[in-house]
Image 1: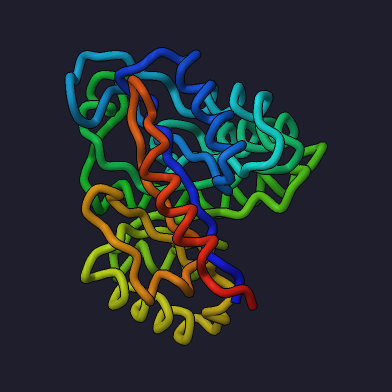
Image 2: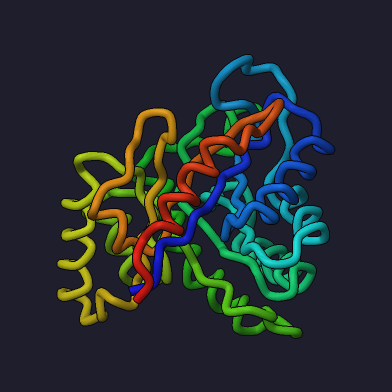
Length: 255
């Protein structure tokens, strides 16, 4: 079994872009596997009026200054872009990066983004319905684009809703992401059950989790995951906790 990928969500808040870029490059040199950002328009914590940068334009720039790490949103908000446009944007960044994009997507939840940028917030149910409508459009556009994505561009679906989100992950995702908690393993089994219902091999969906590095310790169960992700925020994007998780990964036995 391969060792888990160690991924970092560089939260694009409270700092300057030059410092963010510098730390992403340092993180790649340190040995992280995937660089994520998030898809919001304002800080999620700390000073809500502080500095913040947009997701996909940030990723396009980071694609130019990195060489090895995969890149993507963890996760993108379906509501903010027409699915045809999103497919084209992701494909373009994929070519800029040489085929390293992970296309993360979810239904959205941060009401201030919607209100301040003029999107209809709706309800959790309506946003999930929109995601269900748009996922096949997204995949169809990806299949039609010329040139096609350069890499495999796996689709990551984030969320733990057992009736809709996990079903959509079964139908469309290459990677499923959910935050580490006592619920994670149970949600994982619900995803496996959806795979049985819809006749999909559960092993064809990679399992990813997000952790709070200040409160979470490695567990035996994490060793079998595809990916472990932690978030770090500006203005300094401190890589110290990332080093600890890289040491944990590197100490795991090789196959």
